[in-house]
Image (tube, rainbow, N blue to C red; front, side):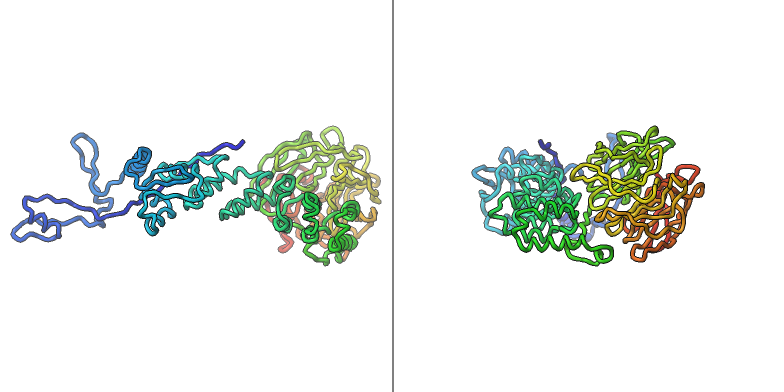
Length: 619
């Protein structure tokens, strides 16, 4: 299953530096002795002086021609393969048991070696042979060391090569850690990092913790947080202790499609051994963010769960969650507990996807912009051509909803998995819709308005990922194609658009409340905007660009739900309509669109702090 790697490391060895001994031959012993003292012999005309170490620089190493045509270097000489040859020779002597002065014993297996070689490569052996009674012994038994691992490590000391495999990685890391061969220990950690998967990551994390492998421990922790949904499906999770489960689920960095996944994994863990684990339920539910579950899920599943019904503290958590859903607007924003704070996964690369479009016809192309590297990449194409579609991110998947395929307005939905870099087909909408608005609210996808090929639409529908079905919701008061949508404080806004009946671009805005299934008119924008991009930052709704007939706008305005007012903010550098807008790290990214004459490849970024924009690298 797992392939092995060959890990090769160079061993730097210094076996001691002595003073160079210069032999100077003389006709008399006295002159040899006096020369050795660096003095001049009385009555002699010869002054013998040693070259100092400082004088042996590169300029003093003159090349003298040899009689056989080869060049000869005077001064310092270095043989770059001397150490390698020496260790090869010592290993041959070890294999033949020549000049060995110690025998290491592990579980009855004897391995001859040289103390000097072991001590030069391992602080463990250095301490043993220079400061302990083993320094006077020629036979040493090592307790708790696997003989196979010891044999591999002794060979590594001499050969600087060790093969790390699935079969030996654990015993090798354990022994290398004991013998303080940190190079091999780190090689084993690197190997285990490459083998992490949802079925073994919890065990590898515990193994790293036991052996003090901090880098591997941190890497495994991050992997578990990023793949939590898959990790909880395996037996390793069910065998965790209650403290380990609590440590895992209280992390702000968990990457989960919805908080329902965290709730469900706790219930599953309890049910694995109800009699032995039920008393841990309240302690674990303290870390489940029940207010972030949808109201329907709370009522239909959580309230009816027998384990929850039988625990008074858990009932309080349910009441807290339901109360949170009853609050509206600013009251909900001010209601703060540890369970109302959304999780913030980290470590995953943040990317921006540009999906489909017209060039000049509908296309399947998908481009990805890495916000850290500031570079564009091509990723997997959609199964079919699609432009004028709505886009939404639900969980860890991206949905392309409706649109125009070059011939027909469509009701189809395609789903992109960025981990696998592949597209699949999801359930169709009830109506064909292009130039629609799409948003995510309460873990469901809403498709609003649009154009079906013959008329603008006032209808809207919702996709429930639990039931895997679309259903119609209340219709808006006005037909709106080329409508922009956004979500603020649990309410959905339909901004501007085009009314096919009156043939006018719209400045009006409607707000949808999912609790009552009703639409309400709110304050109008200062300008008519069809094809406006909509984004949300800090509970402020932004309407970006758009057009009013032939006039394409570069202006932007912002809506504050607390005051029900619109105000102008800084203009874009270019006029744009039908642009994509996304919020990231307190900034609004405005991507593509057209200026009324041609399609745009440019990207602009707006900062509300400075009320100004800047350009990103072009696609």
